[in-house]
Amino acid sequence: MKTKSKDSNDYKPLIRALSYLKPYWPYILVGFICTAIVNAFTLYQPVLIKMIMDKVIFAGKSAAGQAEAMHYLKLVLGGFALLLVGKGLFYFFQGYLIPAGVNKAVRDIRNDTFKHIQKLPLKTFEKFRTGDLMARITNDSERISEVFGLGIINFINDIVVLVVSLILMFFKNWQMSVVVILVSPLVGGAIGRFSAYVKNAVDKNQKQMSIIFNTIEESITGIRTVKSFSMEEREIKRFEKENSSLFKYIMNVITYKVGQIPVVEIIAGLGISSAIGYGGLQIVAGLSGNKTLFGVNFIEPRTVGEIFEVWGYMIMATNPLNRISQSIATITGSAVSASRIFEIIDSPSEEKPGKPAMKEIKGDIEFRGVSFKYTEDQDRIINNLSFKVKAGETIALVGHSGSGKTTTASLIGRLYVPDSGKIFVDGTDINSVNLHSYRSQLAVVPQEPTLFTGTIRDNIRYGREDALQIEVENAAKAANAHNFITEMPEGYDTIVGERGSTLSGGQRQRVAIARAILRQPKILILDEATSSVDAISEKLIQESLDSLFKTCTTIIIAHRVSTIRQADKILVFDKGKIAESGTHDSLINADGLYESLYKCYFKTADSENEKAC
Image (tube, rainbow, N blue to C red; front, side, top):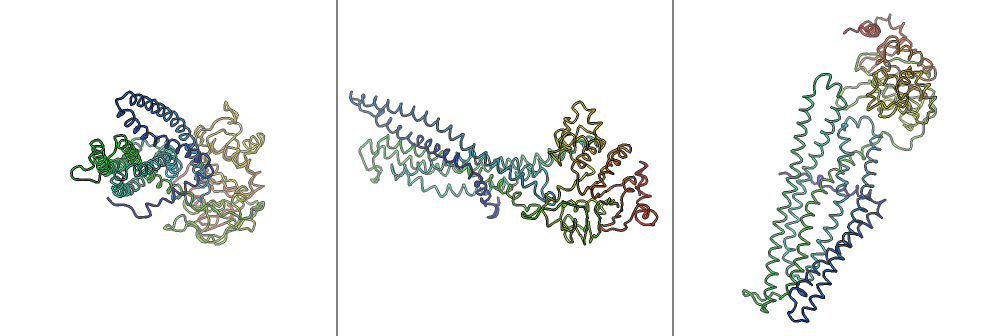
């Protein structure tokens, strides 16, 4: 078995996670005070055992001795009753207050993680899969909750009881204590070695858990495609394969955790058995009055009660030692989870704070020598692109798939930052202004619109949550959505389901267009926005959008001539560059790429008789 490098044993992320407990220190402080009281009750039990042995069981047979024995018996029974009641009461407060503070801290960790995910650039989401992010927010934060909750209570409890028990053992009988302490380095070494194995195994387990989350997410969100292609069995086999791998990694973690326990017990047992043997000789010496046994004369005679008291502390030290070894394994796994969470939180945000707000946009757009590629190992999607758009113009972007149309629209929305060159809006570099102030003046209608679980009203108001109902209805009317909405039993209060599953593709598209209209943007981006509606609906929507086009700059990506023809200018993309530009009438007779696209695709798209080119 190979252990990981020193970096893998880095507990700094877990220590950093502990800082989240700072605002809730009253919970933790009072909880630890209760813990100390519980430990005090626990540590007093051997004293009562000693009293039973010396003052009750081995009391004299005389009447006075028997009376004294009854007196001490009453004291011991009363003491045990008080111990049980007091320990139970303070254990309840300990078990409530510390988890309350811990779960508040873990709640903050989840909030911070999700908050930061919302601020990450899109390129980061190409590094982390959806299932991986879900696993880190849920599964990894839960592991931290386990170690901070009952884990931290048990760990502190066990450390305190172990240390105090050893100290009391030393003062009560230092010879027996020395025998036990001599095996401590061996126990520590075993725990350290197993912790390294556990951390390695937990790391693999958590990564596989992310794969499981991703597999589930992909299968459920793509369930229509799965069923359409009758691929249910393939998805089942795929999940079973990943789940079997997860089982293997889980069993590796369990193997190391449970394997650690007997190893620690055997090593500790050697010391304990030696100490018990030594204590037995001390009892024999005490009962016989002979300080020399088997030729050894360094034995201090002890009463039965004294030895039983020390044995009580020894047992108290042994049980925490086993639990501590398990707690360290749990803490080791939580360190891996903390590292995975802070890997997200420490990822660079989409923008640096402190940038000035974008002034009210008029709509002039300029690309100046812009180049961009999604990953380092791929060719440029946009290559030294330059063009200008005047405020209020409607520009259509056309070209073959992969020519850079959608990427150009994404760059305008500042979803990505150019690798080189700059993008200006009204003469201002959009990368130099506050992102929210810029995007709040834009609206985007993608080819596959995203609707969120909630009502139709909520989805239309997604870009303007303070919009009045009359404004929502006017936007829906403009998008030709009002009629089908009011025909539903719940009208605007209709729940659309996850990803808008209760609506048809055309209905989802019209709700998304209504959302964009309600936002009253200064720059509007339509990416195949009418591709999912029929010709009649498209015509009605187009008439409604005409009024919106007059108030904003519009970027259209479309394959229908009916949509493209109205543009003030058409930019024809080819391999990340503009091959041609002009109006429909000027380009159709230019015997260039646009004419080829028109004959091959646009014309047939309008006639719904598309053919391959």
